[in-house]
Length: 201
Image (tube, rainbow, N blue to C red; front, side, top):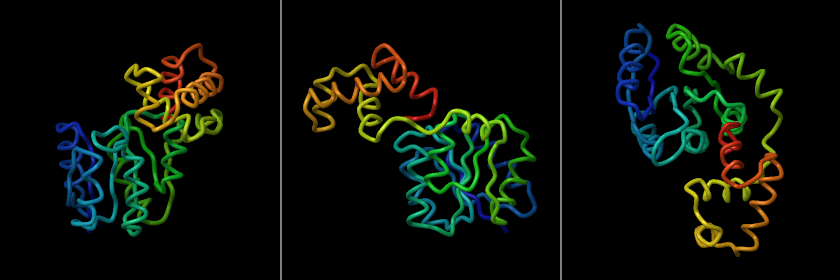
């Protein structure tokens, strides 16, 4: 029996996925969580064979949780299942140790088949997204530039960002300027938008 953990913040979607997977003769959903910061604890408790993780979750992203799972429960495979098929997300998922990446608009039969393929040792990636990721190239932003853009998401001032990240205001301005240049945008909010659309944040 394949033991599955589901991490999905939308209750109806989580329930539907659990119901569909439980209909498979060889699968059992052993844990369900609605927040990213509950994934590792639930996995350590339930010991699933595979974790199906959404990316944008409250508390902690599925990508960050995937890296934690790889470190703390390496026997558990990770399959990212998301609405947001962004090239940068795919790259980050693979770097975090995910074994598969699917977008939610695919057929449900594909999900069960992908789970079996991942547990058989394959790496499974949505083909359209794989092509887009190759053409998009790597994330041009450094970790610090990503941190500064993430802190700027809610329209925070340079002083606010500096305070949050324990940096000087001049350093924050430098990182913002570099990020704006690398994203080919005119200001920090456009840079945030461009970085999000590419899955770099």
